Length: 359
Ligand SMILES: *Cc1c(COP(=O)(O)O)cnc(C)c1O
Image (cartoon, rainbow, N blue to C red; front, side, top):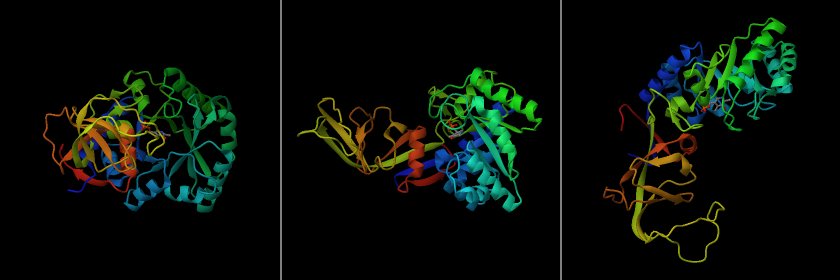
């Protein structure tokens, strides 16, 4: 079989989805399946839908297009703020988009009027992570402005924490979003169908029964795909972590001194590498490199293999301590973390193989 390849077990993705959907539904919360971690791979999106997500979301319009082309008709949310001038494409491909800029919302409204089909908006509110969204204190003012646009439907409000600022979801910041929902309800006597939070790091509050009752939607990517919450390094109860595995092939095995010889400059990525003298070591090179994968996002299945480093096209491994007698042409397997999965599904050099059972 071709290498490097990403092996994908769709059943495990569906099972992870079911586990998370059932936890959230018991708390009155719908789950949005976020596909950006796999570059909108349609088979994975379908596995999420089979597991019971209410809709899909992705941050790239190209990924949404890919899913539409594959025949996915479920509602899809555009997760990254749209670009000015892109309103027509957004309204065409996505049912819902997150927004924070009045000028953009005006464009989406024009588009909605043109199509005679209002575009659904989720107004993003910054409760502290300092990435996208209007400040908590300005939320009501923004709502007032949005309501003047007749070609958009204010579907709800949302927030994101953790991804940029590393802010942890708490009863307090989630409560801020909830309190805005209550205020909007009072001030405008509006139905506000969606109060949305994300991502995976918000699951802990739900597990602990501490998510405010007004929150009724959660956007989950990593938790479904990998069964992990990388904000705390936690494994999610009842999920599997190996729906994805990376396979790459050994193209050289040699025993070499662990220290380079010669005058050292910077490596191909502008860093000055640091080496530890561990004597002569048995090393393997695999045909996969930093062009394809973030090294910090992959973990050898053989726990006695150590990743020493890499360049664009090779990863250098220390295999001295392994009990296996590896040979040229052997395949090595790796578990994946979110940055690994994201980079691998972005690389055109990595093939995708769908497996039924665990490898
Ligand atoms: C990526 C993203 C998510 C999903 O985050 P995970 O941690 O992968 O679950 C949710 N909301 C927004 C706005 C995102 O960009």
